[in-house]
Length: 452
Ligand code: PHE
Image 1 (cartoon, rainbow, N blue to C red):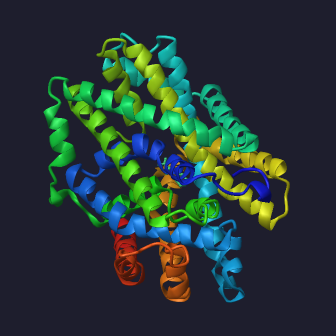
Image 2 (cartoon, rainbow, N blue to C red; image 1 turned 30 degrees about the vertical axis):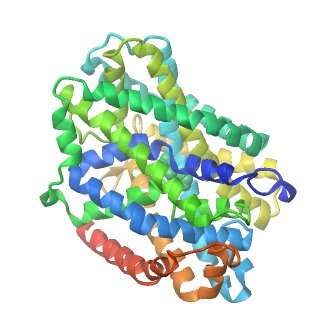
């Protein structure tokens, strides 16, 4: 899927599912999901999140696949390729490229932290510490300059290397083995966390919905989190869709990806919240949450140091399969539209991402006082992309497919030219045309009004 046109495409349906799930499953599930749930009051937010994943996320994901596979193009060229009359819609692709670039910038900050936690836990620097000391380690590392920047750069270079080496053989193969391993480790963490004394308060927080805690702005956050976690609304899955084989079932692929992504998010909630309450921490502490909570969980289990290394290693890999897709969106665009060489595009994009990413990383240290509308630069990018750019991108994608592109063509692509049954089509098309755009529109407007 990396190299040139002749190698375009995944080799099997499992390959496509794994790559798309690799893009979806990442820091969004294990880092962003718990702290967003924590900041938005727990159970009610979780319920909304799940509703959004299956009633909005899945149809939008399928729509992105349709656009990508039908056009066989990058996310900007796709619209033009579908027909000259759709040329005006290329702005949707441009929005996606910008979003991918911005997300990659702040995502690589956190991915860098994860990499460092592999070393911290491996060298025993996290074991035998009190919860306060664990928090102290996090604060002093992230507020530094050189260390977090080096980690971020290492991660960006790693991503670039994999994209250049050929994702098909490297990442497709690796993820098939490593993702199940991540699942096993998550299950183990859940068991440990649930058997901690005082853990039931965490479960109650996660699973007992209290709708009085919901505001329009948290509804918008739930939508943003669902889109962010599924990698939709910004062309990642248009790009990957263009690599899916013509004979694969797009609906089935989407269901598998959305299901796997939700499972990992839920497990991560079950691993985190009981521990948060058992160790007397605050669920609303923001981006530092998992880095402050999980080392305590590891510290309280036999062979905890070993499991900690394994866990952060797998989390780094999960993050890597996501950054690869982020880089790939921009690189494929540069290769196909700007006629750049893949190597040049990869290095140029990586360099620019590091430049912007530096500001994100330093916003936990030297630039901590630099605030834009009450948020640090890092928080600003996170909020801007997930809460606004992705829902707006998603809205444009479904408006295009539901109202502008012929229904017969959509049906044709989803059924593989009539060869597959598609009993779901009428429901899907109704959601695509009416339910999803109306819901997205209302949530966006109310969320924006509620935030201002
Ligand atoms: N879905 C990824 C995650 O959950 C993040 C991502 C967003 C990746 C958008 C690609 C595109 O970590």
